[in-house]
Amino acid sequence: MKNKRYEIMLSIITIMTVLTTAVGVTFSYFTNSMTGTAADISATTDLIGGIKFEGGTNFEDATDIEPGWMKSKTFTITVAPSNHEQVVKVKMDYTNGFTDLVGEVTEVSNGAIGSFSLEKNTPENTDEFTKVLVDKTFPASSEVQTITYTLTMKFPETDSNQNYDQGKEFNATLYADLGSSGLYFNDQNPNGTNTKPDTQ
Image (cartoon, rainbow, N blue to C red; front, top):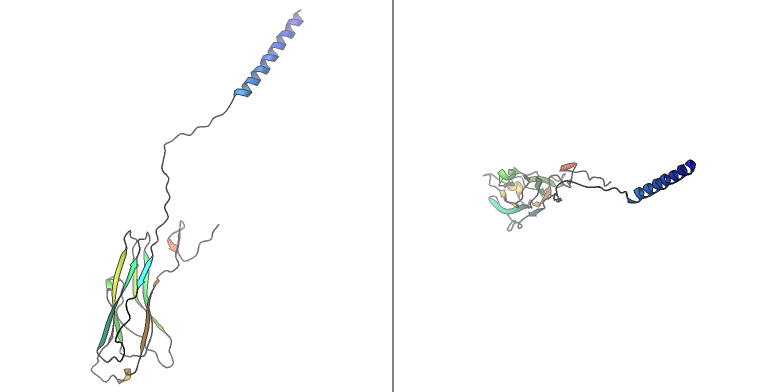
C-alpha cells in the first residue's frame, strides 16, 4: 500500500512537471524595446557653382591701323553660388608681329593683370603665345558673383619712325578656364582634388 501511494505520488509529480514544462514553453516569449527621442534626418548635396564667360564683341575697325590707335572691349565672368571657392583665369592665345602694340586690363583689384606687353613672333618662331589677363579667386558664396573687365589694346605713337610695324598683324582668342580644372569633391577632399576618386 505504501508502495502504491508512492507510485501515485510519483505519477502526479511527473504529470505536473510535464504540464508545467509544456505551459512554460508554450506561453513564454521575448520582447525588445527602443527608447529615445525622435529626430529629423536630412541629407543635402554639396553646392558647386558653375561659371559663365562672356567674351564680348570683336574689335571693330581694327584694320589699317596707325600709330595712336586704341580700342577697348568688355568681357564678363559670372560665377553661380557655390560652397567652395573657385579660381577662374582669363587667357589670351595670340600671334603678334607688332613691336609697339601693348594692352591693358582694368579691374586690377579683381585679379586683372593691368598693363602688359606682348611677345613678338619672328620668322623663326610663329608659335602662339599665351597671356593670362585675369587670375581671380571667387570666394564661396550663396549669391551670384559677376565681374566685368575692360580690355584695351593700344598702338601708341612713339614720336619716332615706326615703319618697322607696317604691314604687321595681331590675332588673338580670348577665353576662360578653371585655375584648378577638373576638381572632384567628396568627404576625403572637401576642398577638391584633381584626382578622380575610385568607386568602391
